[in-house]
Length: 269
Image (cartoon, rainbow, N blue to C red):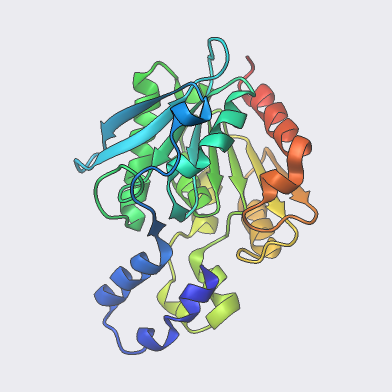
């Protein structure tokens, strides 16, 4: 993401603000259409669900079932690239911790309709939480896991909501802060975009932040800055040697054990 934002520095000087906003959306969101992995091929107990956002956009998600009858759920909000199908193995690993997982395709991603925008993906997350409610999961039994850009979506959704908990992984304080480290002037035009640091004081659920100390996309300091802006109760876990996209891989058993303990603390089985 950082390298792509750098390429917009010259265009920013000559484009009108509305055009700039659309260009930023094209850079920030890197969706892959379709489904690259299939649950049946992976042997994952999953059903596909369809529902609509408040503006009528038809959305797709995978409901990955936990072994046995789960009474708690995870809403998994992935990063800016790819699609939900690519995260099915990770969702299955979360499900083995004893929680059903709803893995959302944002609009324009995977099998969902529409075109992604900042306000659009926020609406998609609200619709996904509503879908979990329709399946019988009360908000107090739902944990959000937001990764990278998905963390910003999670923070927006979690404001003043009675959720069980929120996990933010490799998440930035704001898009402007990410751009400031790379290209300076572009940060001025990104002010207010995905500004999680401004929203996170409204969090009303326990927070767990996970960040690799070698994150090459979202500097470790930005993850700490977002954590510092959050209210208690909160915990920050650093993963030595992990970059932006490999926290689970590098963290291994420690990573899943930490998320499992958090689940058990905020939404006991």
